[in-house]
Image (cartoon, rainbow, N blue to C red; front, side, top):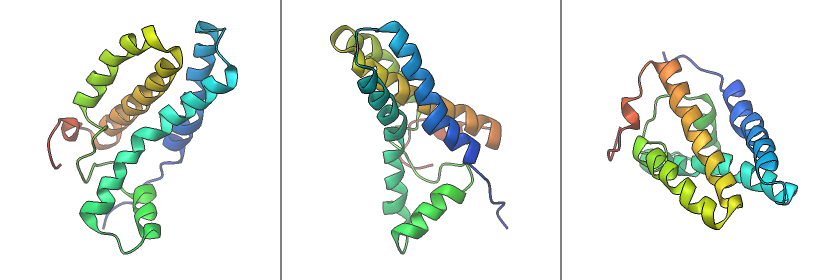
Length: 142
């Protein structure tokens, strides 16, 4: 029988603590930017990477959305499906994009920093909780 895990601390860190820290650093870095805009971009940047989990919905054909959400919140950390953002290639691409975006729009940098931080946290959480990160390699299916 599969052990049920709690992701409460991971989710609090990922969706609350991390965006607030990124916003605070951004406020200090770009004092001329609107504080509310910084917090909004940081929040959305930290949440948006998980939009790729919808791929699990399509591959595993859950009976309803409630069972899909229950699966996401209770499942082991192992990636059951290819996730477009949760891979090393996406992390590298975002890392390369940050300095370019920073020249044009600092708020975009806030967004990308939060986005990348989400992925980095997931990467290290997978490394610690399941002991490997081979599923972070770019491939069609894990």
